[in-house]
Amino acid sequence: MVRFRAAEEGGMDRLKEAAEIIRKSGNMIALTGAGVSVESGIPDFRSAGGLWDKFDPAIYASIQSFNSRPERVWDMIFEMIELTAAAKPNNAHYALAELESMKLLKALITQNIDNLHQEAGSRNVIEYHGNTSRLECLNCGNKYEAADFDISGKIIPRCRSCGTILKPAVIFFGEMIPHDALQQSALYAGKADVVLVAGTSAVVYPAAAIPQQAKRNGAKIIEFNIEETELTRRGTDILILGSAGKTLPQLVELLK
Ligand code: NAD
Image (tube, rainbow, N blue to C red; front, side, top):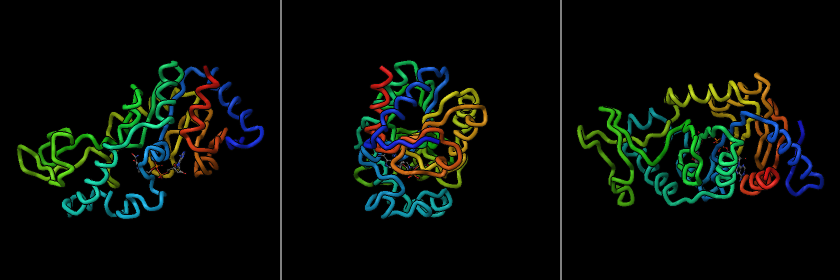
């Protein structure tokens, strides 16, 4: 495994090596996590002073909590929706969208729920954990746009048919990954020859298994993170250390 820190001497050689691998690839995919949105102002699970310092995800992001005390969980959801609705894509999101328009990236699997890849122009996005911009009724299955409710007024939205408190269409801990997302990701991972893994601690399963599945089929794993992760030790071929908002655009420049 080769390591690279953007500012280190010789680091650009590692990025060039990654670019060479990508140039020869025919089926590159990407897996992203909360780290790519940190530079857009959305904290990951580790950021100090962020949303997750205030609301323990083990409590507030579990389906058991939502089912038993939805009003309390909505305290967190109001802030989460406001935070993601106000955020704008950063250079990491734009770089990944550019890789797709350069026809190098075939699919982008994201664990993020903030819609920022789509806003940056990525088209083939597999939402593994859903999206905060939509709401759903767990009782009758109706679906709504969050923008159609008074989220900033902190009025808990209810289903217009049955009156049940709505849930954001995101996957809480304890919920199943949407069937389509699972199936599509497995298909892409099965034929991928390169996987870019950006801004994820790679500990939340089953998403963390995607690069491992691709690796078993011979794919190269190129990881972008500010630190080593579980994946670094288990499967990464090239680790590019540095903020994704800097390193991913550097990669795109090399590929032009
Ligand atoms: P995580 O918080 O566990 O890990 C984030 C990773 O990103 C860490 O390894 C960290 O070192 C790295 N990182 C932080 N800043 C970075 C930067 N500027 N550039 C590159 N890497 C950076 O997040 P996860 O692995 O995505 O998994 C946790 C779960 O959290 C996911 O299920 C996701 O749905 C949810 N989540 C999503 C958002 C979002 O939508 N933006 C935010 C918080 C949590």
